[in-house]
Image 1 (cartoon, helix red, strand yellow):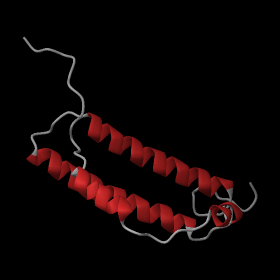
Image 2 (spheres, rainbow, N blue to C red; image 1 turned 45 degrees about the horizontal axis):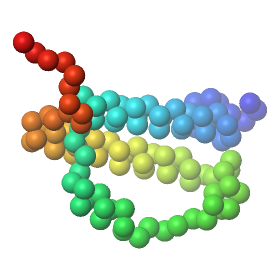
Image 3 (cartoon, rainbow, N blue to C red; image 1 turned 30 degrees about the horizontal axis):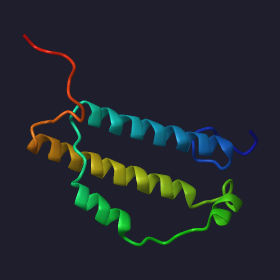
Length: 111
């Protein structure tokens, strides 16, 4: 682990693991909000439009070649986490406006 501080600010496996944990935690919170009905997905048409918007592509070979030593990787993770945070806030507003619908029907009946 030479050259790594374990805080996610160094390079190498420890930083990558820290980024992976940050991503997993953020996505787990996002999924939890969705399953509790506190996050509502965007309209299908908006998601399809976003998915069809052209973005710069990197080749798989470039990704594999630069996997360990990409100084921009951390900024990619940080940018994604900022985007995800903003999307969760927007999804919470959509859920509130829609009356907090559950994504699947509840199996619990109230008498």
